[in-house]
Length: 81
Image (tube, rainbow, N blue to C red; front, side):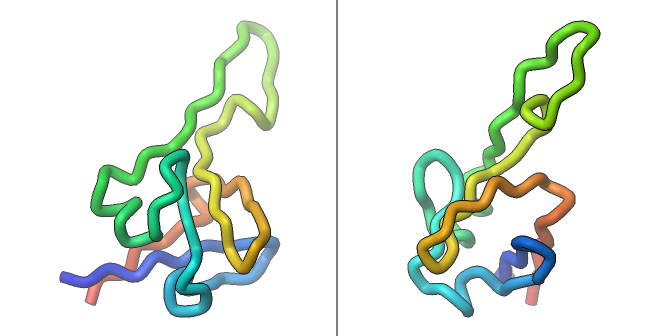
């Protein structure tokens, strides 16, 4: 099954590889499909007692059309064909 990785970047949904063949994801800089095939790793923030911060939530870095985005998992869609 072929997967398409969609991400909501600044309020607009994008088919990452279709719209940017140079798109990269995660700490290893993999293509979106390879990122997903290799376990879809995210960064988890450190949870501090009594404090809540944007940095505590899991995310993946996405490089799309030369811009860096910090994307939370609820802003990603994996579509299988």
